[in-house]
Length: 383
Image 1: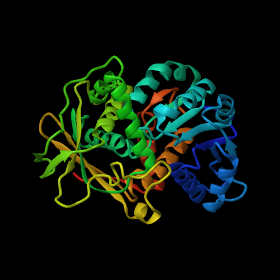
Image 2: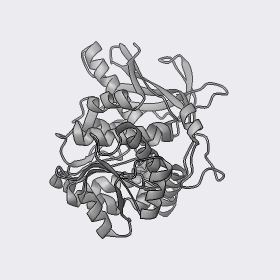
Image 3: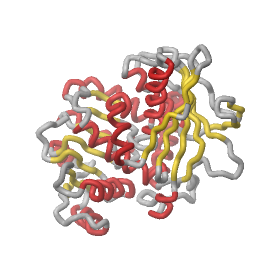
Image 4: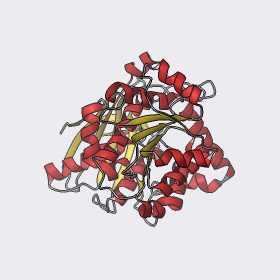
């Protein structure tokens, strides 16, 4: 962290669809110049001022001009913030220079990436230098993968409290979900597929649950690739499109914490199959939204998600916990999670050392508490 910086949080990409939602949340929840010092950053001063005025933020909201193609402007920006929140993706196309600037300056950087190929690259290139400079680089601070990664963390802590020990097997099951896709997410998926076409080894990485745990390869994981009956939730379950990224982040958390859940830990994610019910994102395909587009305010507020986690001990005992969100997963809830993760990192988790982190491994129960207090998430023990 950059402890003497002028701002706690700088929202980089504040004129984009998701960045604007993050800035709106900060303005509404924390005001300007209050307990949280924050600023909006982007390529155009004019566009930043326009977005600030459109969302009704005070005229004194600080605006910072920074462009990914101008390293000098990035360096100047990161020196002004304790943490940079970046919504400028696809990260594999636009994220490298910002991470490098943050690592060099010792400034924290949080993103929304669900691009495992880019995350593996950042770990390989920057983890050692971030440990040296004190910068905390925290990936996947949105719907991928906070509710899942912290859901497993919460299930394991519940198991330790109720059963006396962590458990070697956790299942994540999506009970219900309603929400739309933004153009930025669609673009990230397209960029990853293009990377696979160019380099077949990227495809191998995407299929490996331990792609983000350098030097550690755990046991074979449940495939989650076909519809099956799950007696632990009393329902049929089928494949879940985000399992590929979330499972990697869960295994990385276990790895970063020193494998408290065991080196033989197994985790999978599937959706409960409910005929006719929406359990996936809408808006996929060529007719989906373009970058800068996404669900309307009414659609975001009508959205929700409900995920259950079942922890299984070797002797057959179980714990069951749930994570629920009060907005659409991809945007209404994601913008609140990203903002609160950044505030948590710089205020509640100052002791976490530099390096490339997952939210749960860096912040754990501190982040759960903050998300429940402010961001509309609920973590509950069900059994």
